[in-house]
Length: 260
Image 1: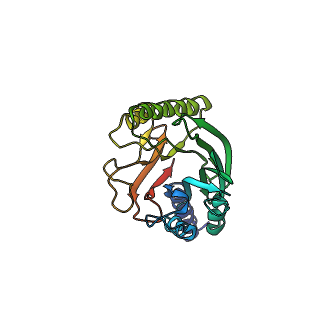
Image 2: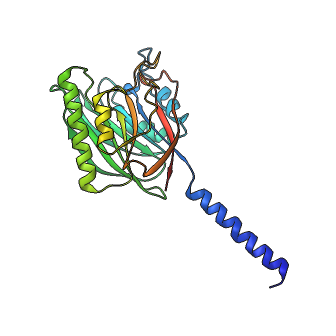
Image 3: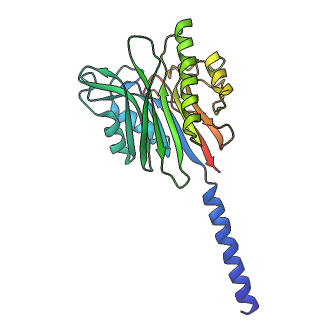
């Protein structure tokens, strides 16, 4: 092999190495969004507006709370299937509670295959049930997602219930030895609350800027929606943001993740 061919050969090897390294460290957007069953701040039901809000996130994977499937109040629409179909994404749905005509719960959408592993009943407020959906995202570097929605009341009793939810889900993850895990959703807990402190104590990394609010979407003054990583440091997160949208009473929150 002469000098010019050697140079070209090594140049191409170096170029391929840089390309593969870049692919391996490519950041992907992941978001969580409480869609309030497709009702915006104007109280109007408009699921296509919800679809547009999710599309604008440009996310690889999206965790959705307050999703109706075939309920009377949502005109019998399977919202998880409708949204995923419009976006060309794969999805799974996890029931949390019954509603007239259908059910209500959480969904996970992804451009990759989504494998539903579990739906866990979690402590709630006594008059409606809540759940967490556990999935595996079959991306080039697979990861797990737990999408959940905690009880909303700010009473001392329900704050204690939310602490139990954190402990239950942390124990589940550790027993299953899942890693890395993105723990996401509407935790109905403020950034300085005991619940969020407990999340950190259980070994999770909070991706959110705790002073950047997501609720109510008209004029956010509370942080309720979270992106968390387990174990802390297992995934690199950057560019956390709250997206301005009134397609729900919550704003979607998103960040860019690099899977090592």
